[in-house]
Amino acid sequence: MAQNHRFLPLILILAILHLPLACTPHVQPVSKHTLARLRQNSVPSLPTELHHGEWVTDLPPLKLRPGSEVRIPLQTTRNLPSIEILINGTPLHWFLDTGASFPVVLDADSAASIPIPILQRSKLHGLGVGGHTDGLLGRFESLSLEGYPVVGRGIAAILLNRYQLRFAGLPVERMPINLLGLPFLERFSYVTLDTPNNEAHFGVQRPFHPQKDAASFPFEQRDGRLWVKIQVGGKTIPAFFDTGYGANLRAPSRTILNLPLHSRSSSPGSHPTQKQLGVGGVELDQVGRLREINLGHVRIDDVEYHASDSCREAILGWGPFRPHRVTLDFQRKCVWVEKAVP
Image (tube, rainbow, N blue to C red; front, side, top):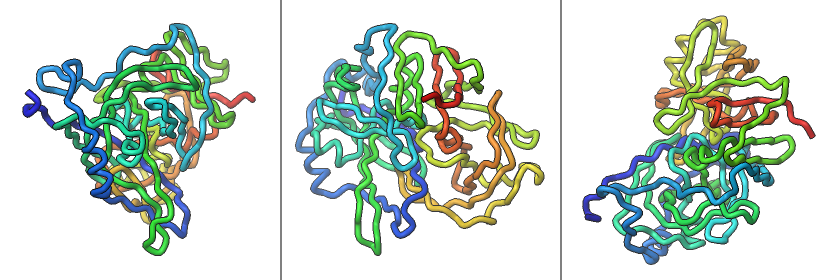
């Protein structure tokens, strides 16, 4: 039966911007040594991990008490929200990434350091900013938040790339890319990312109560993404909301060029290009600005956008929301934006 396993598609749109000027991002396949370490610790799949020859990647039930709220420190790592969470008792830093369609994602170096057992004959194929990446599947035994057990045994995707910053062609810093994706986050009633106060809140089977002056915009969960409608100059741009994308807005070049001229304060190419490091590699985008965008009851002025011919779908990133208290409300299917209260 194991020989009939299909490739598992994986969508990852994490992109890290505003890197040090003297350094350049670099993506390369993991070393043969790391790959050998991963494959040395391989195990056969369990009956519960397969269903009609397909991998079962759903997370097990939450172990947290219904009605509870877990609060943990929130960090901003490379302009993206991140937390520390224990996997098999080992602390790792993770990006909270609604653009990832897999619940738990590790880079190969992190997986080899724990180590995570690799499921034999497992393969997956990922797509994100920078292109394609290949991966494997590994088994973890537990995930914990601040000493609270969250879930038990599950399957993690393992990316077979290494992410680095280089100076003068020499590696100066490894960049771990470990992700808690949308299928992990949506297990909670709500997830609040309070960047100004450096806190993340995870609600378990309990309603979220926004402030009176909170603004919101709706989303639709489809194809493993949070789809929203952006209003720009009388036109509607469908986009998915991605907390793992560090800029404001990324869209296909043709989408930007089709917007009314009065909606753009600058056109593609009028600003310096920027490199973006994603899970699949590095891309070069044209940069411009929009006068404003509207999402439901939320208005954002002077929005920097990135335009790319290789981009197929518009992405609403984390950049405009970083100064605020933002809640992903999975019960009401909307995003709340509030002023941060100390």
